[in-house]
Length: 130
Image: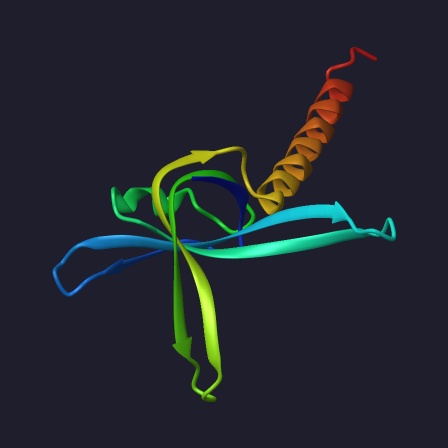
């Protein structure tokens, strides 16, 4: 199965009791449709993901990053601290494709580029012979 979504938090590397490392992260996928009344309905699904192949990938998995994941889905149920029953989706990831940086990084990059363009323009003005 493949899913495409954005990371909801930075990835974390954890070590199991058998000294194996796993990368844990969360991805949100969005879906929209129109109901019978013609209203647009937005639906977000959250997946708790695990990746066992290489812990180095955690450096690239930052909040907001758009990723395409291949793997398999499983469900889990548990009782919360308040006694309420809860359920979640786990995605056991076998492949990760990055489809660009986070929105936050793209915004920072754009502002950095505009600042450097301003510096270049000022330097050009100083180089004029008169």
